[in-house]
Amino acid sequence: MGTMKFEIPHTLNKDDARKRVEQLLQYWKSKYGVQSNWSGDGAKVTGKVMGISLDANFTITDGAIQGEGTDPGMLLRSKAKSYIQDKFASVLDASKSTDDVNKGLA
Image (cartoon, rainbow, N blue to C red; front, side, top):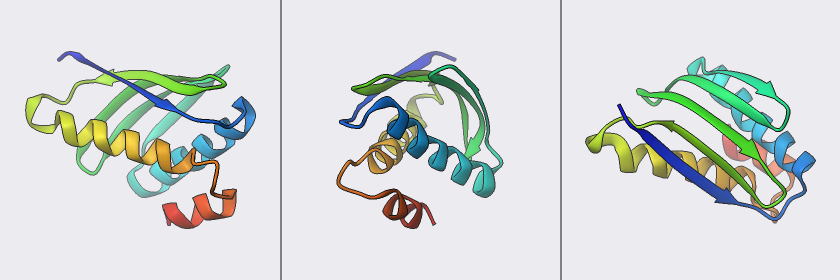
């Protein structure tokens, strides 16, 4: 299998972005059993989300989240990439409070 790259821009500082991403990872853990391991400003995520295998690494910077994961293949590629980008973009939306982010994940 190949690799699928993604980049999601944001306007938050790195600490706020990380807190929000941690909320997303906690949601994925409780709903799908996805595991994550942090190292510095990055994390490795493994598991299945909505039936699609997720094996990805990403790094949080001041202006974006950049990462790559295992490409699920031609049939699921656009769905997987869209889901990841939409979820990250939603939690990183600076117009939302952290409470709004939590409510949006429930």
